[in-house]
View 1: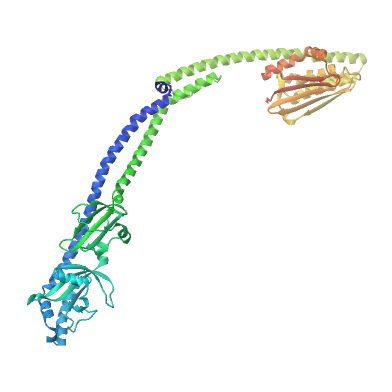
View 2: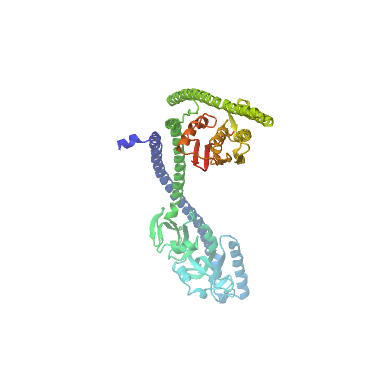
Length: 576
């Protein structure tokens, strides 16, 4: 384990160190922050849910208390009680109409309150004003109704019941407050029932939710549903039993999951307000905050890691660059480290490395210049061996022609020799194009044709792209001379063909000089290696090619005795 740590790269060690110092405290901070936020949010969530419940309770309590006050105004009205306590047979119909018209006007004033829908009176059937859809309705029509029995059983106290209208004009359900009307002369004798109807839609508007997954509903003490905040939630979240939880939500288990519920009776009424919310929904805010907290801490961690990586890289980058440059030195590549100078320890190390590399490069450049000067001197020495030799042979041929009196041939040879040496001189350059070298060889062959009575045919087949390639001056001409002197001239008839071909193959220049002379055996090959047509051997050409192109084996011979010889020059492509 210790060795593994010791062998670990400096960059990894720094990354681990910075990560431990930066990330671990961040993780600890996250868990502490989450714990405190969880407590705070749950406390706030409970406060919000309880406040919403209490606001709904307060609104409904005020509404129902106001309706009960209106009912009290009706039952304590002596005129209403006296009129209703009179026997219907003792009053003429016109008199009944006049009296009940006063009650009707009073009732319409009370109905102007927007919190209630309708007020009805259930009175003795014998009154002429009673009817199924009238303000005054026959009391016998409700004698069998459960809600009527509940009102009577409650002894005249305000009783809230669910009422289903069954008239021709109205088939809706209402929340009804019912109270008994008493005979002012005998408070044991009920003379009718007054009912005040409330629209269930208006009640439902008061049942607001604090979270989406919540059900708020109103029911009677007997468990009869009055209104709710949602039909979908009602099916799976309504409690199967009455609950009175006091001032706090309590946790309960239903078939559909875990819930928090609170239930209380509204004032002195027989109505219960119940609120049920999903435990998951109650903690949704916590989960949301947790997700946001995780995201924030994740972003901070990523930024911290990026910062750690940047700091680590700034520390180790120059070291790794220096290591890479040192590895390149092992491969023979001496390159200085080109970075901005620094005054720290690593900067001093980089400066020392650059000084060392620059010193080594200067020494190598000096050695290279010395080598180049030596190579140039060798090339010029070899060139100087070839340049005068052709002149000796040509002057010898001119002397021979002069003895025979061949003036015209002498003139042509002199012109050709002039062109030849113009090319040879080449403004002092030691290297020429293949095209110039071919012209030089062509002039040489033309001169030799005079000597051999035009028995020599010279052919050139060189690609256009090869003509601009550079080779040492007087490379082809000695090989052509060899082909004439040691190949064609030794044939019985002294005639033959010399062909020069040239191609560029895979960035290499390939030139072939081929003749159909007598060819070579082992003895003649050894002799030709030491003695070329110019008298200095092919070793001179090989040495110049090696010095110029930097590689051996640039010249190759392939000969068959009695058929001819092919000389191949294979060197890299070099252009001006």
